[in-house]
Length: 241
Ligand code: B1M
Image 1 (cartoon, protein in one colour):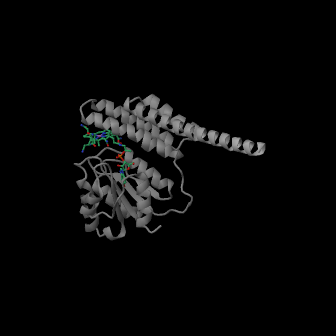
Image 2 (image 1 turned 45 degrees about the vertical axis):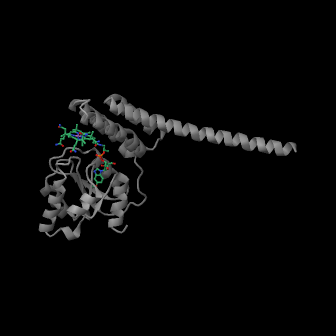
Image 3 (image 1 turned 180 degrees about the vertical axis):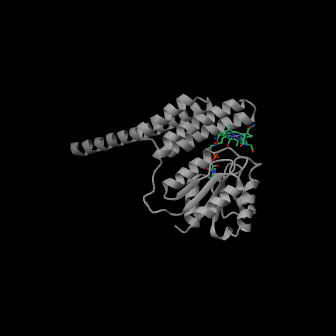
């Protein structure tokens, strides 16, 4: 009888500690994400960078930190900007905080297992659009997962996309747009690819906040990817990998 009680006591104690550890993990995770988000919302470059270093030092998931910490902060500050609550210099400082933190977090993104390239991707933000944070994350995730990525940066002229596709014999072209006014450039690139006889050789993926699956279909792209993770899945699917 005493042995049964002892066993039961052991099980209860073990479960208590297990739950406590899980609860602590959740708390730590919520805290670092909340602090990252708040640092971006306060457009505090120094603090955001310090927190990014803390993410690395504690072994916290860098992708989660980017998407649920930095990304959430940018979403909030974007809304504040739209509502006229903050001005452009503040938005720019928040973007700077994210960009500097990305240089710390990106190298820690999980690497793909295969060293063989899965395919060549030419990626860029379309002409007239200088938003490059999301595109850079997508490029980093594709690289980390085994794609050979040629990042053309932002404000990329249509001809630069087409020339690079031709030069490297790309398997995929990825276009990002954050402004409703620049989305049309995606269609322009597709049309020029068609005219150059290159459309059949290259798959087209589009993404960015105002872009949707319906838009991708409308302009004749092969796929829409909602975020960095989806861009990897979609790219693999398009190339049958
Ligand atoms: Co600007 N900006 N901005 N901005 N900015 C937006 C986009 C805006 C929605 C803000 C707002 O008003 N609420 C608004 C656009 C409105 C519209 O067109 N509907 C806007 C505006 C108006 C402007 C200016 C015109 C402001 C001005 O000058 N008066 C100007 C534009 C200049 C230009 O481009 N010609 C401008 C400037 C800037 C900054 C320079 C200050 C800075 C950009 C800095 C930089 O990128 N280097 C900036 C920022 C930071 C933003 C917000 C706040 C955040 C964008 C961002 O980086 N998000 C943005 C508001 C918002 O989006 N809520 C806003 C985080 C990033 C991780 O997400 O880029 O969506 P995102 O990328 C995601 C997915 O979309 C997807 O994966 C990424 C990772 O998950 N994805 C892809 C992206 N590309 C993909 C490609 C793919 C697949 C997935 O395949 C190829």
